[in-house]
Image (cartoon, rainbow, N blue to C red; front, side, top):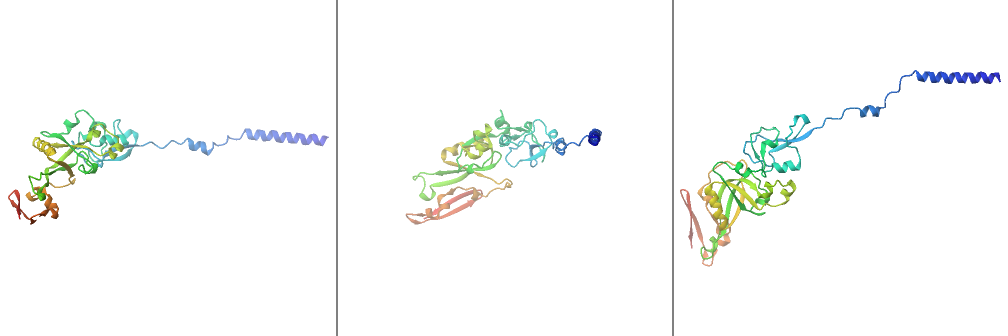
Amino acid sequence: MRLFLVLLLLLTAAGLGLVAWRAVQPPAPIAAASAAAAEPPAPTRLRVLVAARPLLAGSLLKEGDWVVREVPPEAASGDALRDTPEERAELQGAMLRQYREAGAPLSRADVLRPRDRGFLAAVLRPGRRAISVGVDAVTGAAGLIWPGDQVDLILTQELDASQAPLDRRVVAETVLTDIRVIAVDQKMTQGASAESATRSVASTVTLEVSTREAERVAVASRLGRLAITVRAMEEAAVAEPAAARAAVFGADVSSALSQTEQGAVTRMRVIQGGEAQDLTFR
């Protein structure tokens, strides 16, 4: 009995000592997961639109005139244009108010959008006029024409049988050259989304012309079918020879039309100075 009491006292003393030892130990370290959660998050960066190259004031913007750049939030102004489908659609055909260097951020104050009041009058250069022509998927270059493109206008017409022989009944000629496109359809004015602008085919193209050129377009639209051809972006302004500017008849394209019921027909083009004349020998 005495031995049992001694063992009980020893066990009790050992338990109290263990409790006292744990009480004086420092607290356990915080879990690694909690420490990781306390780390500050990575800074957020904004995607903004900047000029892809030097852009002159008065330019009509199109795809390729801007690129995307990521910047810290504090480096972007409140009206900076963000990289969103809506902002990109708004920039298509917008006029740049002031010169922007390559890499300079674009803001809403820098552009006049097609749907803004006074856009058309602001885009036109002094002494110029705006006139629209009807186009379709073929005559409008498959819908790939954008504001700011330089184009030529071609008239194709079919003459009456009593006015011309078969080989000269269909004729095409360039009525205007190096004309700037300033608008494509009403959807540009309304700021349509990029998806709708891509899927639809333009029905009208608005051109910047002189007063005399506007009269030529008005007459040409009554004579026959108008088609638009896009000029190269970096094409040099070289005067075309008179032969290149002369009208093209059906016989110039199809050798079959050079044959008539009377037999073979010999045709010759005579160029005198700036004038070209076609002679036919039967």
